[in-house]
Image (cartoon, rainbow, N blue to C red):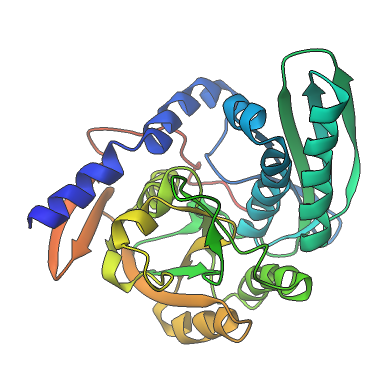
Length: 316
């Protein structure tokens, strides 16, 4: 029980999670907390998202920041069951050397993932700032708010990768998987969406696995139980570290129980790690299980995180 209590404390006090509380500021715009906006278009939906890169990260590692601007946007599009069509970046740099390093990182990640940079903006001579936006297209969007009680929770990752350094939680597979593999990885999300094997998803990002799940259930007016021992993870990585990891390819999905096997196999046949690791319920709480013992980590009934929830009438 002591170790489970430590995991709960790790998850609920993580800066990456607690920082999400500030998203309440955008509530007047009607946001639902999803990974991207969905707009009906033709025979499907445009999926539009954007990311701002942390200025300290941008100053310390301009190449890595450029790469991250691409990876995070592609992940947001993929989480919606969409194919990314293109990226635009908006960069402010103090000088040409800094700008070139950022743009080299953007170009490298764009080439690896097969998503073109189609435009952007550049200003030199000021403090560094970097944002990027991506547009994709989906026929059957995987909106996080569609998760519902009775669904099975599936986690899927590219675990053949590496941490960017010993003291960071960023785990990337872009060096260890081939461009062909990296580009096919996203097709797993499209396939489970279009075959209706899953109907909701969210990417794993700054709040870590459990924190990203908390965001998912808040938007869905639901609860969830996460068995941390069932989450796929790289060999040798402690569960404590993996729970707080921000992976280049990591997703949480909601699937009807009868489709779990097919959904998991959709990822595994592409060389990705996937497994059922919990379920959704109606409690509006996040419960963690470790070594057969459970504990409530967060109760949204009494402590909202962002306050961004999907309208029960919303649909796509």
